[in-house]
Image 1 (cartoon, rainbow, N blue to C red):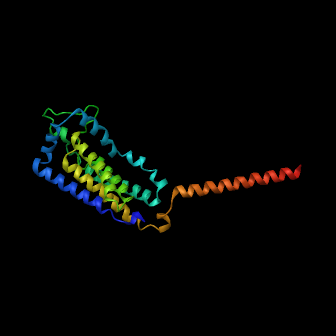
Image 2: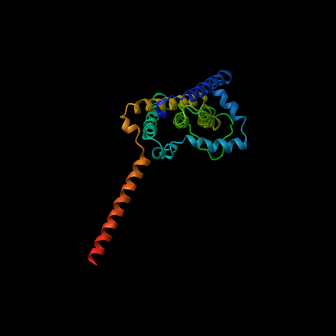
Image 3: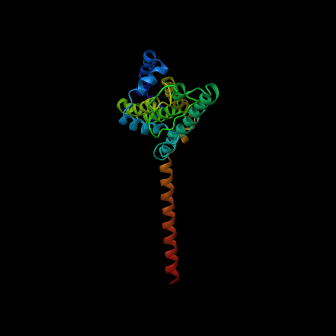
Length: 238
């Protein structure tokens, strides 16, 4: 069962990405990197990151709900629990421990910075990055579907990393914010997985598509028998 296996390749990619971000912080500083990236703006990059950042929207969790239909219910349970766990961590960070922490555009309000057209800029509650947390939660879930294929796991990681970078490029977060979001998403996935594996095996192996198909087939059999019975009675009456 693939959901019982670890995803070492994805974990390695995450560690490598974290080290890279840490090195960027050391070289440019947390705030300095935002200024550096802002100077590199380009219309193509503006359009690209403006759209790819939506892969971290909370609504993306709803788009992944069909995974319950095609996969074992374990993946659906992990998705729901992981979403709940990551929302709790993001809420605590934004609204409790770091409530009101200024975002880049507020920190650099005295500077003339490039703003991507059509992007609504937030001013407060910068830590952690919720979009990044969502992206890495979904990326880890996708990686779990192919736990022994490092090449496959690289693609959901890369997409999630691009979402994280987009938050910095769009001046919505600092590097430290997205770094925290990466690990929140990753931890939420594994916490949800650990809880799910404690569920009864019958729940873990349940497949909604097979269940619905079997009920449909049963309904068709009953319907055909009823039609056959009605036809038989009709012929006898004649």
